Image (cartoon, rainbow, N blue to C red):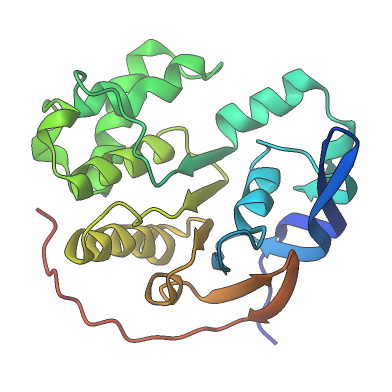
Length: 246
């Protein structure tokens, strides 16, 4: 049996409800999930299934109502606010459907922005790290462009570079192709796939699109707040309509 990579994320009986005017709205029920280092996982489900809520909890943007969540073996419920903030700044990163870039700012300056809040990276290293991340997404020649001069696909690849610059343990991508045409979506997914296959990045992708989910090795379906299926060793041959990043 092949040796498994160590667990990065573990949840047991994780539940989430929202409360408004004394009314409880349950969203997630009894989520048992282990995500190991170097996995590429897609979480699928229809709108309202709870998939984005689960990602927000795993990425420390929200908290569970009950159950346990361990990050690298540490119980997250006992962490203080400053410890959680440090994890958000240095250990996890996000790519969203909306690119969330500063428009009249260069690609490089957008990419290195998270380093301004990183406690251990000196200013002298920021440009070097930023250019390395930009190279990894195929945008070296556009590092000095303003982001509002880029196509949608290039803007999303800039957002991916920004997610890489802190060298996080895990990247969460929430509907990263949702605002893109099909060709740009393929480019973005090939970038994420290469980051996983060539660099061993741990990636959790949230999507409602089957063809996007199938880039991952493991596909989890969320339905009505529960894990309906969890398929490992998911294989798919993708037709590469875009051969070169432009």
